[in-house]
Structures are given as C-alpha cells and as structure tokens.
Length: 164
Image (cartoon, rainbow, N blue to C red; front, side, top):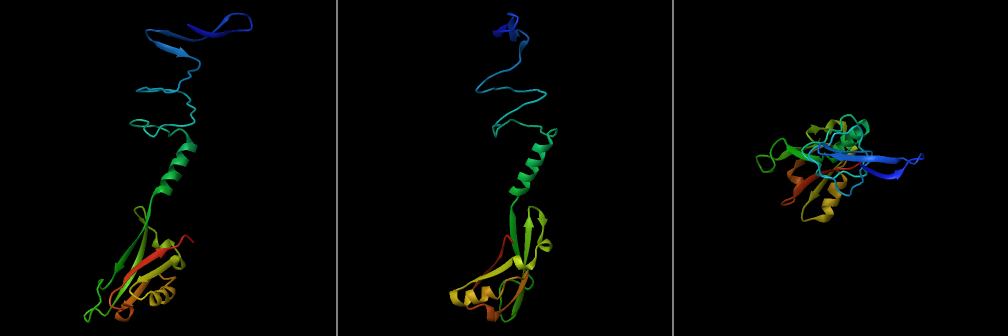
C-alpha cells in the first residue's frame, strides 16, 4: 500500500496499492503510459499522440465527434475538372468547342451550388497582353466557347474558382 500523507485524524491516506492482480490508485502521474488496452469512465488529456493505436472510440463525446467531422470536412480537397464537348484540339474539322468547368468537393460535384461569379477563366499563350484582355472578358461563366480565333498558334486554358 502507498500513502503520501496523513488525514486530519492522523491516519495514513492510502491512495494506491498493488498486488499480483494489479494496481489500484486514485491518481497516476506519469510522463509516458504504455498500455495495450485502457478502460476508463473518464480520461482527461491535453494531448493524444497521433498513433493512438488501432482504434480510438470517441463516439460518446459529442464535442469531439463534431470537431473531428468539421476537421475532416475542412481537409477534403476541392478540385476543378475541365470537360470539352467537341474535343480539345481545334482544327478545320473542329472549328469550335465548349469547355465546361466542374467543381468537386471530395466525391461530390458542387458546380451547381456555386455562383458563376466565382469562375475566372485564364488563357496562357505567347501574347501576355492579349491573354490579359482575354482573361478579363472571360470571368463569371461556368463554361466558355472557344474558336480558332481564341487560339494564337497555341494556348492553354484553365479555370480558377475564387473563395467568394
């Protein structure tokens, strides 16, 4: 048995004891605790290591569950995919094509949830001045139509989605 102090009546304040069956204590103070399994009514921690083991069941703690769900939602990436209707190379046989931007959040397409004002098309060619003019006239649309007049020798097109 282990006691660190006496009670007001002078008795030893037994706080922990150990037998061949295990240890029982009111409180453990440790720098590092290694265990295959911990069962507890309440655990209070400033930090949990990122390698907590095979599983960590926090389902009974609503605030942690909400925080984890929000963090996962924030961590899921966004991506923009461009689709062409008539192909991605213009020629005498394909004089124009429509390019549509589709926005995904994780596995969910969210294009229809976004206002067109957040879409800004960018052209990159050998003529930076013409690119700036073209870019300025191709904002606020979820899809664009390109003709051979839009391509001076060669050009690359992209679409950026603004935060607001």
